[in-house]
Image (cartoon, rainbow, N blue to C red; front, top):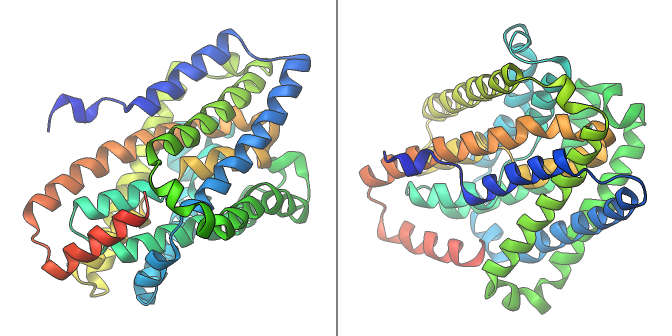
Length: 338
């Protein structure tokens, strides 16, 4: 393993620079109002593109393996929240209350899409099933995440607003653009598939903007008077513990349940990851001015999961020989979804 694999990716570095810029030059007053409106538009654009990029054919190709999908959804929306609650006596020693709420919020998020599929492909797993599970997880998260937040975090979310109001906001700002993008795929799908680099820049630019606004609000609320270097180290430790347990349980649990090697790889990578692309917009909607503190665990978990899963995927991929049919399926699936 080279040192390069342990270094943050360019997107993570961009987020770090955004946090630093927001700390020095937070938006206030009328500028904050304008940026909030721009952020709402960016969130809608982000989920519109998610919907437009999603290939229905790829989902259908992997939709029949319901036992695998049940295992992934169970890990994502049941195992993680239970771990977050059960580890409170340990995590409470490492992080402050608001940061622990950020970890609980992290536990309610859906799986990633692009990186789950990429790592599954790299490790020679069942890529069509990964496309289906990761995409369905992202879609279900629009509804399940606010429900879980309301259940385990309660009145801390959205200043005590009702769960019905919160779900309504989520549906309006995330689900409606997602469905619009999916409906437009027959018209713009080919254009999108040939411009993945440009669209990745739009995706990441939207998240950078959301992070800037969230941290501007947090800085205005005095985040750096509440957060110490020790607290940051505590978040890293808590995230590492959470990811390690999730990887161990999905690895041994999928083996105990009798899944094939290809399906086990899919369960491990789809069931142990959390989506920063979905989490940061949801945090802004659900937690308002407290979103800056809430998203810190997500940003750090994102980098830890990328480094860890990259090493695992390369190691497993180098020792696994995929069958020709599986390689063809992998190529078809990875050609339709980024």
